[in-house]
Image 1 (cartoon, one colour):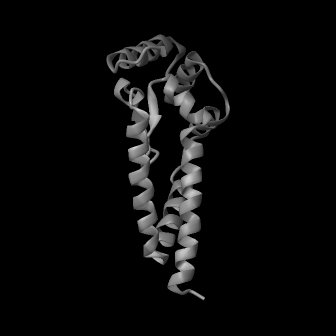
Image 2 (cartoon, one colour):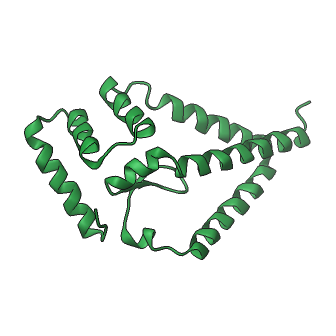
Length: 156
């Protein structure tokens, strides 16, 4: 029942699931909202990174090469069978549990980023709300974001 081949089959199914999930997440409304404030998700770890003009100018060939290496490495790692399954389940549980103690304002902000097509000003006001700063700092946060985006060569 818990043979190498069974683990290999389960690992391969989880691998396919992770590929589909990653494609969906990287093309989601969350990603579009992050791009509006000069942020993006890492292709590898899905952590937040600053968006820069070099990333936006990448050719289709560069993106295809990255995804090819990523897919080949992932496929080869499924050969670890049950170890791949354990790592996948562990990462899944960690992702779900790490934010369980977050304040409700933070959870609401993340929900809005994932489910509501927000304007730049709406995102900035949510950032101000989450940081607990008064509405007087709205202009400061907005100007800081715009300055940072222009320094990285982004036009918004």
